[in-house]
Length: 384
Image 1 (cartoon, rainbow, N blue to C red):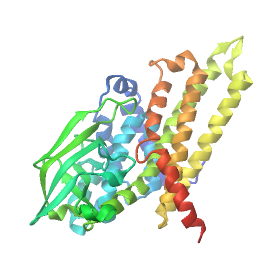
Image 2 (image 1 turned 90 degrees about the vertical axis):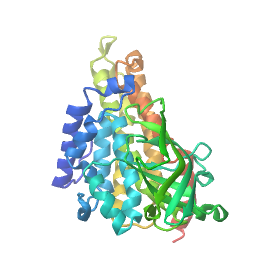
Image 3 (image 1 turned 180 degrees about the horizontal axis):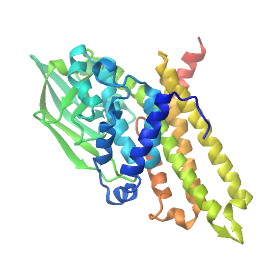
């Protein structure tokens, strides 16, 4: 890969994640995938290394870094196993609403434990009838004195059951449309809150995805994020921050698939020579390498753009997610093709990379929705 001007701290970060990946993930990734196992050991290793504090402000026990450093960690984790990186990144997706919209009291209560990895987070927006159309959510939150009572179902929630804190978006005023939703912090163990079955997925099998049930779930009114009516603002801004992480996942998966298939192509002998010597093969690797490097430049620069305090980030965040995940699907498919029958076998990792990459085009807003965001915001951005 190209050399980027990483600081010494950023270099150490990447090296630390690599060490964790080599010891706690690489030997077990295929087994976790095959048996659909969530193993907490790599998550504990990341917590012990203070890596859950990357974007948590220093005053709350974090490292005070930004989206760029988080992308570096997620990219390297995804190189070893995208299921593990999904568990890790999803916790930040649940932490961002508290960082961005939490009161001082909420931050003091929750962020130190999140930074230490003592509490995992989850972000719960999607519902059975509300996927791309997030405004169609039916979960309600009714104010009763000093409490809110939540009722509804959330679907396909990453870290469901293993998370300690859940950001729930619910309707507080059905007469106000998109302005009638609010965001809440729900804690594991709250009365009326329960977790459904673990979903069986095509990929990302080392991460846990479940339904969440809210049945007369009563929580203190102090757990609302921002004010009533800000729910979709909280959710959409959180996704703006999170989509770079999906781009980083795409980079890690693609790099791993590229390297595995390149190693095969340079050692597989057919017709008396390595198959890499055939132009059809070598040109494919030329395309793969170029697409990965071009995408890395996009994702890194968007992350830095966000960290520099840009206000309008939806356009570029959507670009990084859409372009990177499409690239990952193309690269992983080509990696399988370059390895032929070996690539198709479950004994080899490239088929896992392919299956893991597919979800990147779907979660945190499908790529079709990303194109809607891009085309909408292009006009706002370029009219300036």
